[in-house]
Image (cartoon, rainbow, N blue to C red; front, side):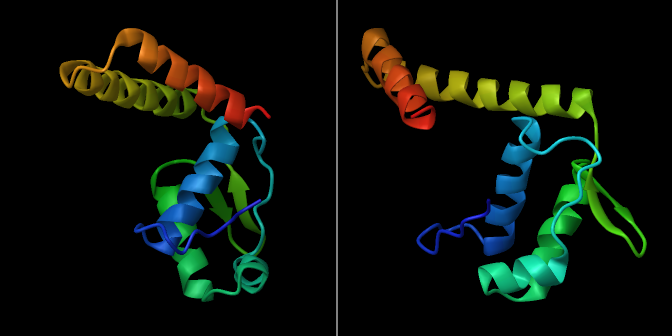
Length: 123
């Protein structure tokens, strides 16, 4: 479920938080679903529990999860948050497309690359 890329320049806690965000936004993780405990995930990934705790704190701060004392962390159902996150990603895609077009990359080449990326995701 969570894979750490040690070649990624982002901190490990950001990678973990981003992966959970993706799982929540895509609907793989449903509302009120329990996340793995900090200790369990730390052992599974062979990393410090403080790193997992920081990722969970970021997710809670951003509104993706909520904590129940003594029970753990759970996915928060917030359709507006999910909508805003998708809009943010699409806006970033639009900005990147504009940058590519300004650099002389043709519209059809952009479309081909997007199609290629979608095929890779859904294989």
